[in-house]
Image (cartoon, rainbow, N blue to C red; front, side, top):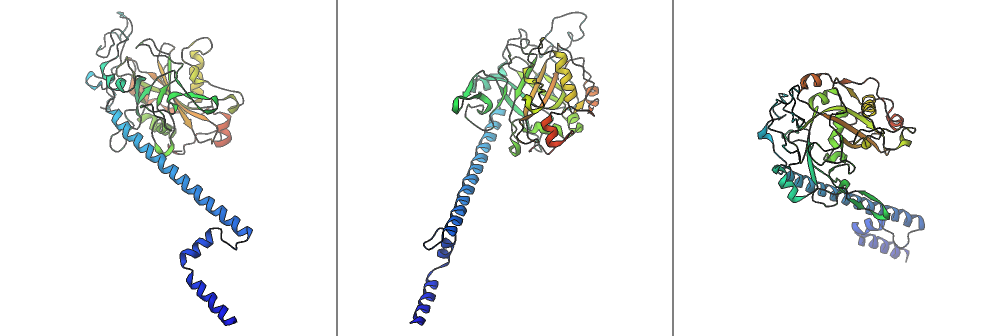
Length: 379
């Protein structure tokens, strides 16, 4: 009788194929004790979570691939003023900067070529029509012409949106509309580049003293303002890419030279109560003075130069996230001044040098020390 039992056991083991044994090892099975069932449930749960996460990552990159493809189409609509002078692509630093000021015999800039001049300062140039037909919120275009990939494509080359509209989130919270909406007004993680809604651009002359433009840092995806992090890599990169091209609907071939690259906190508790609210410097006034604006940039900037700035100049500020200090919500900020016909651009570029005494927010110091750190544009 005992021999029959043994033979029956051997037969059952042979009947259980490999796949059944695998299932019994990983899935709860009749006869398992509580500890074994718990182990299997945790394992299965981990597999399910991993698959869901993997699918989310795949979907994320699929969406981004579509965004990049769509961006290539939008770039074809970018305003092209190349036949009217003022190009950086020749790399000769031959600048023709628009002058919109009053005519005066003692002003040496007045006699410069006027090909770029907007006669009434409110004309929307026809080159914008393609973009405006697709999205009336288009307000400008920003690019860094010299910062290109191996195919000659510019890493930062985007339309800039402007609207006071906000997007309602769950729980009665709101955010800027283009923070998570693209050019086609579809929700996306990358969003779009957009001007601070508190700024204004009414004409070539009637605009905020400082126009702040926001863009996401998308890490390894590399789009939007992600690549601005390269300016952390050193002064040589700045010297190679010192000029930002930015036009509104009312201007042509406007060039801005970078005057500061810096880390900034956006909440007082990130820096022991200290806050440089650069985004609130739109028009210089008694509360937000030009002197304080330049002073804060100079003490925080990773680089210095001989570029002279005045209250009458026009400025742009590009703002994106800085991730080196973890979840501290710090910002990497680049501020630039509009070029003037009297600028010796070569000399200004040559004057870029490292700042030896940078002011860092406390959260940065806690995470990285009192020093510059570059972990890669993708970080």
